Image 1: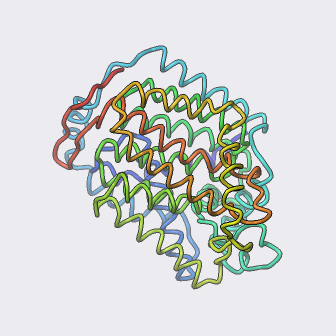
Image 2: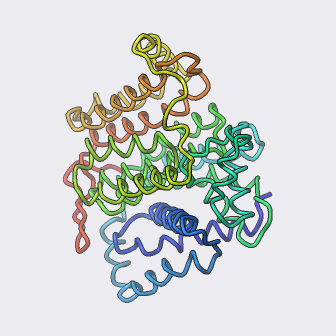
Image 3: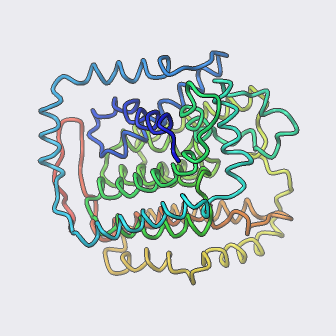
Length: 411
């Protein structure tokens, strides 16, 4: 079972992200801000060779949170008055059932894979026991299978949950996939205020996470950051979008591609772009200076002669083994709504698919190993395109005010 330490330190991630309350985000965004804060602090300490502990990592974010507590009651009352919306009981039941089904698959260990053991969990175990992002361990040729230059947020989160312990709570780490999916669905509901789409999100991605055995891997965390980022962009909350995009950049290599496309086609504002781009650059600089760069440059030659076969296989993998049902589910609301609002999202998704086709255009690409996991990113982008087509922009937010939707909002 999940240990008390893992639960407590996971709850403290919300506290570490409490400083983001000034941006009036939904609850899920506090966890996103906390994870980004903790991961960046760990990365900075590692750059200076300083071992971390809970007091050092929590000091700055808690100090900022305490400084913001003045006027909390007034702010809370205003936010509740603006954001409270009636809920449909059926959609709530569907969301809960989807999460319970996913949780049962995770608890039974039928939704995880060897990747969790071989490098996500193993790196977290090593970092936690050393209280350090151990670059010497990553540079060891015997550990090449761990992909030393993979962005470190998920192993750092696992290391965070080990503070004061010598061993990772492997069951808790695996079960964190349920938390990430639940918070992602909450972000959909909180930012868009359309609970129908929250139910669809939980149901669809619970199924895809089970089919692709991603519990304990980085995909649930990436899905979470993408949902928060796209939800914040939809709600025009630039600050929270920037935080979540930075989290995506620190989670997986394809998260960096998602960040660039989201900024170029959906954000297009410096307040959205600056922090995630600096975060991505900081990780690449850290990896370069510590001799970790590996996966960003494919070992096999990319060649245009492999491009058409790559596109053909990618189109087959896009079925998810479900006769393309997930794509149809997000396409229908687009065609039944204002399709023009979904165009930027469609372009971002196509850009990501183009990236996938190019990166797999090499011999021995083994697309069947990873494509369906990676394809969840363009799917979630199109998912928010469907929301935009149905509802327009749900909220126009600024630090001082929030206005009710201009588009159609339904419960």
